[in-house]
Amino acid sequence: MALFPFGRKAQPTPTGSEALASFLSGFSIEVMPRTAEKIEDFRTLLPAGTRVYIAHIEGTPIEDMVATAARLRAEGYEPMPHFPARIIADKAMLTDWVTRYQGEAGVKQGLILAGNPQKQLGAFDSSMQLLETGCFDGFERLHVAGHPEGNKDIDPDGSDKNVMEALRWKQAFNQRTDAKMALATQFCFDAAPVIDWVNGLQAAGIDLPVHIGVAGPAKLQTLIKFAIACGVGPSLKVLQKRAMDVSKLLLPYEPDEFLLALAEHKAANPGFGIESVHFFPLGGIKTNAEWTHRHGQRPVRAAA
Image (cartoon, rainbow, N blue to C red; front, side, top):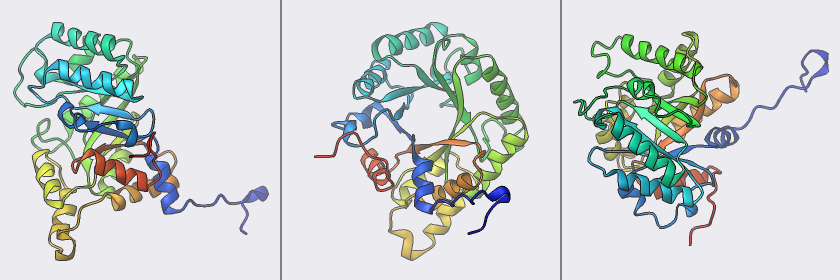
């Protein structure tokens, strides 16, 4: 066996399955109130303590959002509701939301983002404006948006200039808040540009950990529809190439190849900036959860 200087044994390289299982540990997943209603018991699907983002779509009553957060908390999970700036009328509304979430569901974490629609409905236009209100003082964790493939709403010319300025602001905010911060990204399908983006952030002095967005197992047609609607960039070509392969066209997409490439890169480069995986269960929560079970992430209870 080859030895390092002074007789240290070389550390064994983890197998692909070991690297992937380690990479998935502590994953998060996203739900909406209407999709959560269809789940009888999250404990048959998710490991204890899983962070569950609650997407706040325009028009969803805050009562439904808070009730979903309270239910997740009661079942042993960490609810992280979205706070989309553009659908919040004013600071009074934001304060009311935060008070309800904290008082009725013990919420301590939030995803702060500009959100949709593109048209601003109230006083806020960006996550930075929300953070500046001070309403999130006392939160344990705050996530903000990251854009591995750019954001044409922010930088129509594709330059990433405004995106990087916002990231530098968030980096500075991270230095003056007690909350743990991270970048939560849109879902991607190609590992290479993600690796380049994460390395580029670190080179630019942005050390916020990345929670990489991943599309869960789904029909290929479903993924392409969501990818186009959400503005997924270069990695959309991965799906389009797959759609041209008749042998794969009718098979469901699963994120194994994408995640394995990231997992192996992380195993070989422990300082790599991806901290966690965040699933968008576009093919359904149960389908996504069953995929994680196959890769070592066990639910609290076995399904009946």
